[in-house]
Every structure is written in C-alpha cells, then in structure tokens.
Length: 265
Image 1 (cartoon, rainbow, N blue to C red):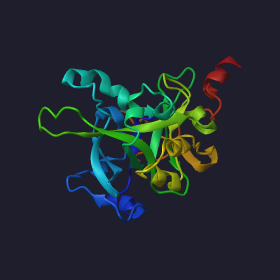
Image 2 (image 1 turned 60 degrees about the vertical axis):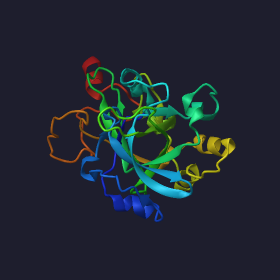
Image 3 (image 1 turned 180 degrees about the vertical axis):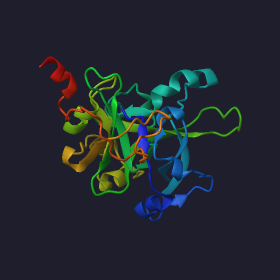
Image 4 (image 1 turned 135 degrees about the vertical axis):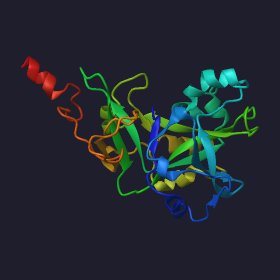
C-alpha cells in the first residue's frame, strides 16, 4: 500500500497545476515539514476537491473516518485501515464503504512517494523514493468523507481522505516486494486522467476507466534513500528524498544481498 508521501515544494506548484484553484482560508499547512508525511499520523494535508464546480484546496486529514466510527474508541480501533482504498473495491464491491463514497473524489498533490523493499537476511527494509518522470508535481486520486462526529477538542467536523492503490507494475512489484499488502502501488495517473477524476458528472464507467489505468514502469523514476521512519539523522546530512547508497544492496529483481551470496559461494 502507500503510507508515506512527500511534498518538497510550495503551494505555488499546486496553484500552477490548477490556475482556477480556490485555496481554503483555513489551510494553514507547513510545506517545509511535508518532505515526509506518514498516513497514520493523521495529519492535515492539502487535497483538491470539486465543490459544486469549483476546484478547492482543502485541509483534510489522511485516514478516512467512516460513518460507523461514531465513537472515539471506534475511530482509534479502525481508522488505521482507512488510509488506502483498493481500486478494485470502489465500483465492483457493492458492500465496500469506498463504493458508497465514490462520488466524493479528490486529488492528493505530491512530489513523490516512498515505498519499502525487503532484502532477504536484512533486518530492516530499504526505503525508495519514487516519482513520475518530467512532472515536478503530480496528483494521486483519492476519496474523501466528513467525520460523522465532531472533534472532541475543537468541535470541528473533520474532512478526511484516503489514497487509492492498485496492483503494482513491474518496477513497483520489485520495490514493494513484501509485507501484508505486497505488490501494490498508488494509482499513478497522467494529468488528463487526474483532472477527469474530479469531474462531478463522471459515470461509474468513467470512474472504472480511471481506476484501470496502469502507469508504465518506464514513466517512473526511483532510487533508494536513507531510513525515513526514524529520527536518526542521515550520515550525509542530505534531505530524505536524496539518493543514498546502501552497501551490498542488490539490484532490483534480486532480493538476496550480494554480501550474503558471497558468504555461501
């Protein structure tokens, strides 16, 4: 799945993407802190919605709070599973909550995402930074929903969102090669399909057309980076998205380290 995203620029990159975009006055987002955003921190993040024909940039929290999460205890118990939505369930699974909110479509602006790769014999996974070639910023499609209960502290009815994933392409299969949701990737799209996702009159057939798109591996750029889910500073003092050389890291497609192979050769 996808639980780590990055936005390493400023709001102008988003407003240039959609010149008619209306920025919500309550959007108070620190873009300097967005180089790594984790899903289960449930932070507010800028997402684009179509509200009555107007494109708006809204501060929504990552991790949908569904209608059945009507107590703080239920939210705490279940929200962690609502940060990603499988594309296969949005139209075809009639029992899915995602199908129920399929008209509430949004775009999640990013400059890239992170995914972790397993290496046989290694204690920790190796993170990779992935982005679309020739696009400084792109958008991942999502769904949004307003919380059924107000925030306990502020009384706010929160806007929340989920990020859509699909079966991985050949490169992403080699990067996201382990874990309970192995061989998944975000629903990467060309810009014309990103904008189509926001069309309010999109039919189920149109939605499915977007969901069926698979980004060719050749359109992705990617490289290993230093550990991202730790407060430990990088030895080279570079940003989290900068390439990092891991000793004995095998090339993609080989999941056993060269160091381990040498021990048994």
